[in-house]
Image 1 (cartoon, rainbow, N blue to C red):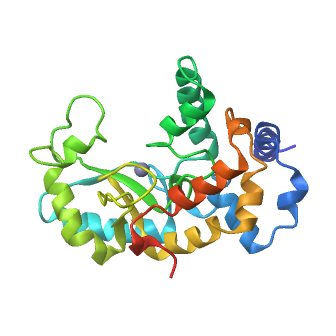
Image 2 (image 1 turned 30 degrees about the vertical axis):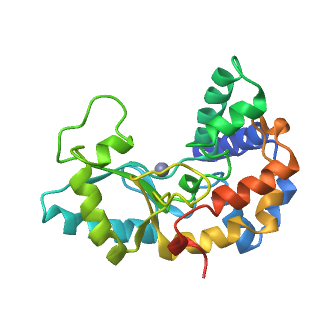
Image 3 (image 1 turned 45 degrees about the vertical axis):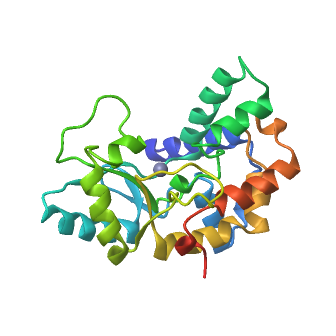
Length: 248
Ligand SMILES: [Zn+2]
């Protein structure tokens, strides 16, 4: 067996074991089901790689936006683009394990979802969503992605103002806005989405086919989620976004 073939088979085998997905499910894939697999963070086939993985059209438009911002002395840098299911699962399980030392599973889950998506549902699986900073200014101490860094005298405040005025021209919109009437995740002034592609992806994410595929995934804490909770989560979190990003 060639080495590449071996690596490919080993990789596929690990996917099967880790996520306990029945092979038949994706074998007779239609184009739509391939996209579901992509949106669950289980396949990166729709992405291209620079230093990070990102969806093709998103990347093309990002480069244009980046060079426009460079004229103002800013260096837009993506600190988080694509995230796989396995990465999101590890973030989720670390938080779940830590929090359930002090509270019930249900309480831990509702705490985690103020900022972190349930594995398989993150918009970061799509490759259309990016968390950005300005690499031309000195990075603040500690966590970069904090609201205080993007407001007032925060180092990324000028970038935030520039994005507000210009990002739409390139198709990028803030997802988790400061609108108090919005449900779901807290305000994230750093998280933008490339609307022309992500609107289509969202349309697929809210489909029954997507939910059926998601239900086959395994991660800690999932058995503590009732059907009612899952329905409410998809409604309030997947759709609790900037209205501009809703499918037309
Ligand atoms: Zn983000």
